[in-house]
Image (cartoon, rainbow, N blue to C red):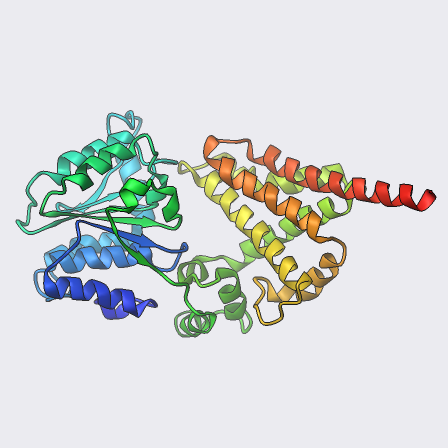
Length: 383
């Protein structure tokens, strides 16, 4: 393995390699960009290159350090193992910390936020000598999930950084981090990958896909290779059908079937039997965020069709005819209300809101708006 295997954003890869060549590593890096463009993967590559004992300004994949850090290629399994090892212990007493190598530490949300216990562990670790005698790398995945009232712990370390410890904050929403932390990081912004590059990669590495699947995966992924590689298309199509039914119910005003509405919102909210018996904390939340993204994608496509933006690719090109007919049923004000409701749900998601009730409210708000318009039209016609 080496940096050469990383897909996309070659300029950023070269920036990191030049840091290694010059032996001038910032105390804190911020990897910013949409989910699935390789931010976490490149952070692990940088950690491997920093500690590799065989390669210079790269990593070999074969030395003891590289072999230990290969565990980072399967982050979900690493997190699951750490949670099983902790058992029923209090998370504030036994912080969730992933440490596949003595000098590499990974923090992930536990399950919603990065906890103060994790931050305190990192603060103590940062000022101890690295086991290798060289450097230590601490990676924050989903760094925007660091609660603002706990951020002062990290800020104190960044204000007086130890010479041998380097932090990488991986964030798809970097501006949710406090300004005081972002200002102390060297920011690298990851660009989305071109759809053609994603389609070519899928054609090479997933030849079992049906003929039109790479195009749909690249369109849904919207520049995210990680999304394209891991998306279950059957699951996506099933979730998309439910989301479209929900939007159509909202667009028809009072003419929708309440039983169908609540069935659709229950499924989109993650209240299926499989998720009612979650094996991992936060799985239902992940499913709900997936549903929200499907809804956003459908509404974005409707906006593009209404605007006749033919030069912009749809997220769902296989549904173009269906979405064109749907777009003729609604107007801009209805779309604005639906998007505003989705935005509100997204903002309030961290407050542990009732997911199904939030979706019910989205449909009802949009439906009532539609009904009010129809009533106004009838009243105007009767005058």
